[in-house]
Length: 453
Image (cartoon, rainbow, N blue to C red; front, top):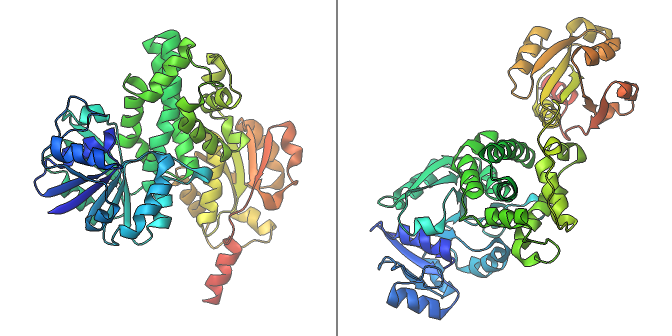
């Protein structure tokens, strides 16, 4: 018998708890705020504030005593993100180290801190995972089959969740990308709003799916930049949750978009309605560089609307949708490929759609006084196997850069900041940008370590 506690007796916590109570090997308890709610659930098997016409599973019970959490084998967190920090700090002393913590709540804090990031600092000794998916509580309480994505670290965590959802209508897929699962649960809300706006203004399937396609592309960019993995986007927490939230009128974020699109919302007056959503946009916006924002016209439009308290959401599709392909060019030797190389390639690719790498040939390296450990052909093969790189061209002289820029239709030239100022003369051909090097690693340092050993 697993002792399962749900932190939060709201609509989602109640719906999850009611489903888990269908498994006779689970003892499920809702941790609620008041003794009145505790008594109603235990004696009347109802939670009328959230589900007025629903009788709950008789085996589902409730408690308002925080000390009861010491009995928990699993704790599901289902409370508003703005209240989590206070609640968890109060509960932490009563949570045993062996308990598995599952975050159902959605939110992001300053500097991109996810809820799991916060939980890890407060409950450092606990095993903490996340569980998100395209699921409305009103559907789950009525036994609709529903899917979640588990973001986890180990097979044992998967096996525990798999065992507690047996004989329920909850289904799961999974990934080790905990960060990505957390991020997608908030990113999709931003784009659900703008799809609601477009539907209110145009009510056209063509236009709706044009914006949905563009939203999916922007979420992919944001996910990569903020530290998630692109493949997570194709799980229930990504594609599924975006579709559910953006295209169904049960979604509060879509509904907000419909209100904005119809002119019934003023961002300067209705602060309470979207405070949490606005904060999410604000926190994410602070993490983005101007170059990245140029690639996110839908996000930038939403940020401008709420930040500037605009009264009307004007949509200019040419500006929001149509874009010119951006091609990036960088150069290097890439001998003894290491994570510093991967990082600069990743960051370069994030700034455009196509990345061209000029790779120094063996003969050119000799003229520079460099001796490569790996031949040009092998270095080229390594680079071509990296997903960020679209094309590798040979660099055989210092003077070829202008021709490479013209021949490959380059829009942005990127080098490490140790070259800052050296290539400013190329600005008449394309934009020039110098990126900070990855601290703590270099080919020279690697060679030194290898030679020492």
